[in-house]
Length: 349
Image (cartoon, rainbow, N blue to C red):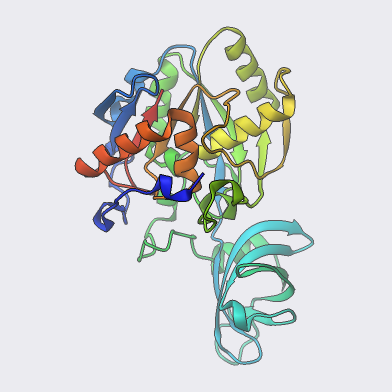
């Protein structure tokens, strides 16, 4: 399948660069994946499309301040690090800039209070990998997470030019388990009060965890979809969520995934169960969902509007059909919906 089949015209002005003041203030497009019918609503109307007994699955990962700015210890040249995957023993897989100058053995220093002061933390390049990827080993005094909170910056998408004044605006209100290099952005629309209103309607809310990394936002550079390889990301399906999902499926109730990361977690767990009831599971997933995929557990999804040729658009197209999704996207462009991380929402059922 040619990646150009997932192209569409997206004016740059529609890529949202700042969050709306109110989380629930976004617009909401609805798409009936069977008929192709499209509706235009506010996000605050989402509850009208949820039924008592539905299970709403949320990704409770928490974004860490994963972007670090430092200097090469030997030359003082600027260096940038984006932490992606914790490997243990103070080792991380990371994207680095400039990759050509950060070869094996190079040391990056972070947080010196003055040019002559000792750095608060250093990272040595242990291994060079493809496309700017490196394995780094950190050295520091104290607690790594505290230093990261002090020195790190939120890893906002590159099209967002300014750092957020409030870091929590790039976290979901239910974020719990630290480890992501990007937010599961479909969840950014919810407030605690709106989630409670959804519960009050009889909808069950069930958490999973997928730490968002390169696998989610890595661009597709291959000419054919099938040739793209996802980068593995850590996930966990808790036992209580597995039990809730098993009961819902047995009773014919809907499982609704909030975001593509929740979809990938649920479908990974379902594939591992091999047709048997879900059980607690976790580990690494590099599942790549594109048209032709058969969904095992997800009945509906809430997602944002994604960029052309992205793996996220391919996943949504697998769920609702490429032609219907692209038709909906063309209407979203005409109606000037906001796209990507801080953009508007889409409910596909």
